[in-house]
Each structure stands twice: as structure tokens, then as C-alpha cells.
Amino acid sequence: MSSESAPQPLRARAAPAPLSGRLRVPGDKSISHRALMFGALAIGTTEIQGLLEGEDVLRTAAAMRLLGATVDRLGDGAWRVAGRGIGGLTEPADVLDMGNSGTAARLICGLLAGHPLFAVMTGDASLRRRPMKRVTDPLAATGARFLTREGGRLPLAVDGARNPLPLDYRLPVASAQVKSACLLAGLCAPGVTRVVEPEATRDHSENMLRHFGATVRVAAEGHGRVIELDGQPELRAAPVQVPGDPSSAAFFAVAALIVPGSRLVVENVGLNPLRTGLFETLREMGAALTVANARTEGGEPVGDLVLRQGELRAVDVPATRAPSMIDEYPILAVAAAHARGASRFRGLGELRVKESDRLSGTAALLEAAGVKVEVEGDDMIVHGTGGPAPGGGLVATQMDHRLAMSALVLGLATRAPMTIDDGGFIATSFPDFVGLMNRAAGGAAIEAA
Image 1 (cartoon, rainbow, N blue to C red):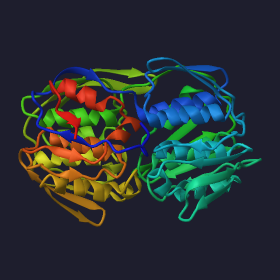
Image 2 (tube, one colour):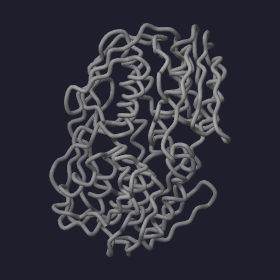
Image 3 (tube, rainbow, N blue to C red):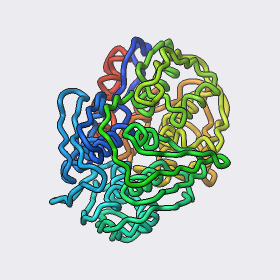
């Protein structure tokens, strides 16, 4: 489903039964993007299992094909990538269309910067509104040249560096996307590329670089980290097992915590400590959330989330936790709406440059359900109802899949149904979200409006 096709309104009503049973969510989106990209840069053939087959990741697969890699789907979640080696990507014969995926667009900018080729990148209406200067400005130091629309927005043209230079860059704001773009560019440059982040962000790129044979050094610096990458390695094809996406599991976790009587197990969830800020926060709220069958797969910690509905209390979330849960604030706000007391989420400026202005979008979502919410600078205060919210509103999702899914989860436990103006683009990250949620809830809790 293209995010620019006809709108698909959806309505969520009180779940007909408690959420129960065991389920699995699709593969981790961040790891799926990177598996395809690093596979394309490796020598040999990379076998991937559990790849997320949402529209965002399929855009990355298509882009890798246009850049000369051989990318084949073998079956459900099973893919094979025959790589070109570092510096071996070829000039694309067509425009790279990244759809709704900011992750793909920003990381591929880094990948292109280090290659001596010309490429043009675009995206859907939502992505074309999102700023790219935070990536193109540091990448220009490699010698690559970028042309964008006013404000650094797509469509974007890149003339990659013929003799790329290594980067030494201190991120002004913690961002795994910007960090990863710099590391991807550094693969093609001689010497050491050095990136300093003010807060530790998800480290899937560092983990996967090591998995494919690159030398990466990481050292703590205050709340953040210094990452050094030795340039021009020979990446070797390596199998990748993609765990379940914790950002997707978050919707089922919160639904199980707020729908009365629920007991649910979400299996095979990636539990990278730089991605689990939401689960830590939910425990601080008193959530009955435990991990079973903890293990390590492909260098990433994995486990099963065991959840039981119960009373939640308000929480004060520090700004330092934002990088580990930046995508989960809308669904955390849904949990906070059911908690007793006023919750404060601090330091959410990064949410203003997501698929939408996700800060104002989350506030509007709660207001549509009759929940009092305030935005003070980059902080959000949610005044919990201590139980079911009134509901009954219409949410403008702004082509943002996480706002859409969060609003639908909220509707599973409000007194009146919640409606969203469009759910078609949920497929960008979670193609079977509605079907899986309805099965867990014992009936058609979410339907076309």
C-alpha cells in the first residue's frame, strides 16, 4: 500500500476479549535496513532470515538492486544479497525512491557519499518534508556534493566523492541515523572515521559492521560514546538472523498492559539495551513486564516479553533516555494516559523531525481521546486518567505509521471508539498489524471506518 494512495480510515473499539496467547512481531526494521546495505557492500553472498518485508525495507532492497547488488527474496523473511564489495556500487540508472523511510534515505546518503557516482533520491510527500541537512552537512566533508530543495529537503542529488576523506564529526544531537550515515561513508575512505555522539544511540550499525568483519572501536565519553571505524575494510558476507522489532512489540506490550484481564507473550523480541528504554520506563510505571528465554542471536540480545494487565502509575522520563526509545513516545503516551497521575517526558525535540511533527501529533492524539496533555518546550506532560480514557475522537495521523498504530491501541481500551483518518501506510513498518492485533484481542477490535 503506497502512503500516497487513497486514505484508509480505521476505527478501534474496546477489545472484545483480553489479549492472550503467544505471538511474534515482524523483524526489526533498523536491522533489516542494515542487513541489506551491508550485504550489498560485502564480498560474497549474505543470507538473511526474518527480514521485515514492510514497504520501508522493500525500498532499501530496491535501492540496493539499482546500485548493482543482486537481491533476491527466497521466501517469507528469507533473502539473499550478492554484494559488490566496498567501493563497488554502480551508478543507478533511475531515481532512488525511498517512499516513507527516513532511515533508508539518510543511511543511503552516507553510502552514496563514499562512491564515485551520481544519484538522485526522492520519497513520498511525508519524506519530502523532512530535513536532510543534518546528514548532508557532515557528509560533505568526505568530498561528496549534495543538491537539495530549500531547507535541505528531498528530492536530493548527490555527486559522490572520487577520493573520499575520513570524517571526524561530533553530533550536535544524538541520532543513530546520522551516526550510521557517517560510518557508511567512512567505509570507503582511508584512515579512521571518528564519530562522537552526546548520548548513546542504538548501535546496530556498529554490531553489524563487526559481524561483517570491520574493525570498530567504541569508548564511553560522558553520557555518550566515541566510535572509530578503520576505513576500507574488506567486508565478508555473513548470515543475519533478524530478531523481532522492539518498536513493533511496543504496541502489543502497551495493549496488553491496558486492556483488562490481558496476559500475552511476545516472542523473539530484540532486546538491545540501547533500544529498550520503553520497557524500562513501563517497569518504572509498575507494569507487569518480564523477559523469558533470554539469549543472544547474531550479536544481538533476544528474549520473550511476558505481559499482564495491571494498574500503572505516572513516571518522569529523563531526557537522557530519549535516544533509546525515540520511536516509542507515542505508544508510551498511550500507557501514560491510563496511569494514575501526571507523567512528564523530557527532551523530545527530536520528535519534531520524524515522519511528522510527532510531538504535536502525539499531543493531538491524546486530546482526541479526552486526555489532558501539555507541551512545554521539548517536554510533554500527560495527565493520566487512572483507567479508561473517554475516547470518541478522530486522529489525524499525518502519514505517520507510529501515530496511527498508537491511536488504534488507545482505542482498544477507551470508553468510546477511536478513529484514524488513514491507516494505509502502517504497512511501511508492520504490514499485518491489524490482523495480528485482532487475533490477539479475540475478534475484530480494529475495522475499516
